[in-house]
Length: 252
Length: 203
Image (cartoon, rainbow over all chains, first blue to last red; front, top):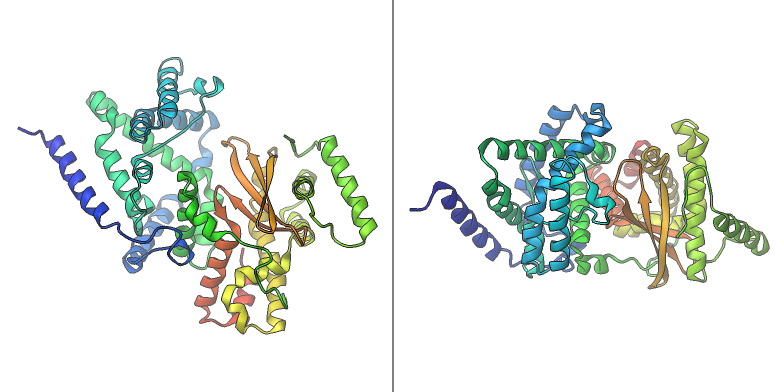
């Protein structure tokens, strides 16, 4: 008889495959300005909610500056170490075996010599951080990006990345390996890292959320450009290339 | 690979800067980036000038004024302004275009100048240059205190010899700013004069 956990995995994968089938939409290079956002109305409502949440949590600015640097670095290293098994699994699925091997070594080093991930000695040994996720695996497998969506709490995403995130959530190897209290601590560390990320880039994020004329449009274009760049998706960057001779600058 | 610490400039960049300064005087016109090397040296000097301003430790307002001056002397302002205004430029008058170029230059200096404080103690290393259509693409790595290094790519026009765009971790400045200007226009029901007035206090 399937355990409840397995049931959740199956249901998520089913929903995910249904969503992916619906991803038959233009690629990044084809839509105007590389943006395909048919759900703009609902997305904007989610954005308004996320912005209120951010204001409530940060008071309109990151609060992590008060955290001492050593503590921040520790949390960031630990969160990275905790995400490594998943990165390795994804890189194996992407057939990037060299990177998977390096990350497996990185995990062995940091989880032991690195005091359970608190430190990052692997970086000094020439194994720098190299994260991956199931959204990237889907990209490597050739699934289209799908529509832009803004998710509650976690923010900007695409259909492909949202499916990736859901799959990563239910298939995280650590949640099978770790016993009950430890895996909740692990989740706590990863949440704490997200809060620190918000404060590390607080000026840029504040500028985007509170300084721009339309924070929805700004976060959408910045997210899509940055994500495609991370994935190495060149189709949009080529479509965006600006030829300095191909523009009428008369009068400016 | 060249290193730019805020307090030290490499000899090579100094020589490069002096040479191009000499060239500037000789030609009496802005330097033309006829080659990839000149594009790289332009980025070297741009970064050197920015670091020079940061190292003075002046007030934020003074720094922003200096950045504005740097931006105008290195940047192809008419191209940048025309690009970010996009199709709306077709219905803009000559006076509006001029006013927009001025307002946009100051806006960008304020917006990015506020973030340059993060560059104190950081450096930018030039990685290499490649020729793209009518331009040179200069790849650099930015090292900021307590952050992993990130990619910044500068674009220098082959004909103008000036800086016209940059990508920070894949985020295209001109594309992002055109989106913002479009939003500012939408907010004002397409009124160009009102958008320019807003732009003067934005950033």
